[in-house]
Length: 502
Ligand code: NAD
Image 1 (cartoon, rainbow, N blue to C red):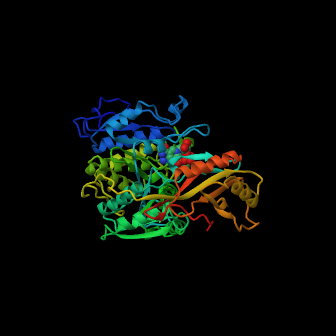
Image 2 (tube, rainbow, N blue to C red):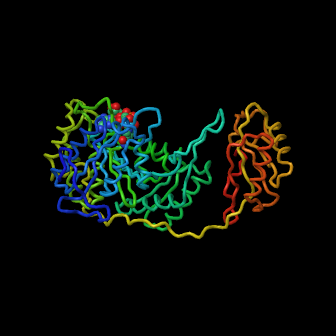
Image 3 (tube, rainbow, N blue to C red):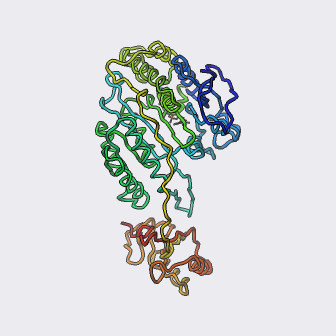
């Protein structure tokens, strides 16, 4: 392997050359990160080198120092060139400065490079790493680009802020198919979907529906769906009952940390972020600044990320050698402070790496050895299935209004009077999703944020011009409207919630 242990830049292939294993090895972009990042990256690269990984390392700088230089996402514009050229990124954790306008680098990289699948294996290594769930072996596959992570937030009134939850059909199809393909490739038996579609019937409902559709294409694999709250409780209590779990972004973010922690330690889990062109590999933990510079951090999470990277770049035999040596090292009782068995002196980061290097070629005796070399070919690149757009019609519009200190009846009177000559007529008003007019209850707590639903005389008869006419009337009456949402039907089916607060 070139480029280690010291920072070196390599003249890599030009972007129009396909990624290939050149004489110098597979080009890989490496970031040493912040906090414990440089130490665990050093240890990881040393182990890969000793195992015979054929990598041409190209180093980039990201994270805290780049944030401090005024780049709000922690990455300089020129750095993208390296990532797009090598298409493989091994990333140590970085520190996100608190407060003031700093954006998450991870979210930026994932979304900019289309890394739609986050794969997090959470495995117990009992009895060598203490856990209450010795049989646990779960892979959490999290949608990585959509959901509440679209980052579209607004303060709309004095009292109310909103965050848009965006779920797309192509996004669901890609992640769900990836999960089933991953399960098949790795010889797993079941894929479980977690959503909250009893409440979010359109967004999570779409994820669940797509899961059911795609599950039917994989009759060799079991499939099941859990509402995320009880599913999460069951995962935390009986993780042995799960195999591959696929979820929308937010639930997956939370559940994968829970799963990694109950398997033994978040310090042991690696993570792959997979896109059609580029893939990023990392530990799931952060930069642990309090442990930085002391040679105590556990490099295992990053090493497990690097193992997934080796499989990804076609060096499965090296991945197998590293992973089995690591398992053999755990079995030997060698461990950093976070997982050291009681009564054993913990090893430092670099000494732990040395212990792994010394076992390259060994296989574990009690733990199950990994067998990457026998894996079938990688998950094929996915093309979204072509779909004919459904006939779209409009029934009316929801208009969101900022009005403090009013009552539902008073607001209704203002809106009805203002829209007297409008084609669209006021049907109901809700506050935080609860219907308050007509027939509201006085007990319902109301904020200054109202939704007024205006409806055409018959379904499908509303048009943009009617919305513009209504807004003109409302503006003339001094109504402070915040936003509008069209009430559309697709193929005759309502594309909006009924808004009765149920
Ligand atoms: P953290 O994961 O960095 O650390 C929490 C605690 O876990 C540490 O204090 C330490 O006791 C332990 N720990 C974590 N990794 C360890 C390791 N490898 N070996 C031994 N012990 C380990 O979480 P945090 O303190 O909430 O976040 C610190 C910084 O990391 C923040 O700036 C956060 O934004 C950032 N972060 C980055 C990433 C990433 O780059 N992927 C992910 C999460 C957090």
